[in-house]
Image 1 (cartoon, rainbow, N blue to C red):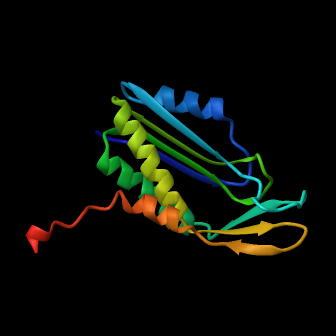
Image 2: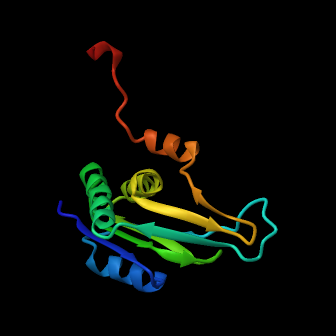
Length: 162
């Protein structure tokens, strides 16, 4: 099965309904379309109303990395579409930051592929995130829980195979 992969890294917001319609129009015999839209969260333990998240990236390198993540998903699951949009620039709490859409004949493949893509976006995509409050600016590191989530997709070694 050939998977249509489309990756965009952009500053402007995306239209969730339009993206769903695009995936539905180009998907081959879809039995399921999974759409995930991630939002910028407010900072926990902060009293600052002036919060923002700035995402920086290296153009070209970032798109190539996201394309690779989508290709890995397409190699693992029978997808007809894998769509990724990731925003960069300064975003405020509540704004959309990422879209992952997967289409397949079967729901399990669509769900698992979307989950896989998000886990790898959180740990392997080359974005640099700076959180800004009135009190301070600081670079956000990936969390151990994100790495543990991505590790579940790695093949387990078999002790009987040396």
